[in-house]
Amino acid sequence: MALFFCWSPSTVRAQLEPMEIENDDLNLGGNDIFNDFKEDYEDTKVLEDENFYQYARFYNVALTIGHTMFDGNRGSAYVNEPPTFGLSLNYFINFQTSMGIGWAYSQHHFFIDQAVNGYNPDPPGAIAVRCLRFFINYRHYLDTSNLGTAITYANPYLSLSMEYWYVTNRFIDQSQLENEKGGGFGFGYGGGLEFPIKLRDTYLGVEFLIHSINFHDKYTQKYRPIVTGSGFGYQNLAGLGYTTKISYIFGW
Image (cartoon, rainbow, N blue to C red; front, top):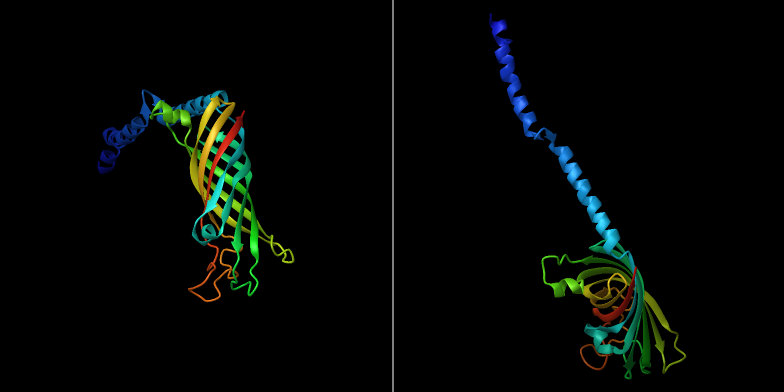
């Protein structure tokens, strides 16, 4: 009897009911919710792709002109010679993401007209500085769909770049001295705006970047004062860089 009771139809039915309820939870109107989710996701993805191919830019080329400056000891030493020139190519992955490569060139100079640690007793005089910067950048264009028309029109974005700076110091007043050359890796971060002149065709861009660079002469002691704490000179050439630029952008 005990065996018959345990395996009676009512007992088996009671054990199966939770399983049936659990299976019913995974079905809405007789449909598998996982299939519904997959279909909705695929439909959304297709719509996004169609909108991207119809309305987005795929590439753009930017011709830039601007100004590069520094702070810290490097900023105190350098006299900047604008403009900064640049050229870049960007590839759009989707509406909000792009990757790019490019270069920029800036000129500076400084005067060491008194004896310093590395040039004693004859100071080097005028030194021309040429900076050539190569970079790879990432841009994230902000979602402005819920913001005002003016902000949406401006296409605001955030930018992060990995950079290599190649620097040449040429001794103008001491021609017998060899040019100093060296490079350093760094990062640039900032943001900008792109105002359309003609949608998907031409834009006017404005960008501001802060550069943190490990220059080859960042901690040089050549220009340190002969007497520490007094006299003319610079303890090192540390300092951040800043670039403000305007770009004319061709897109397709």
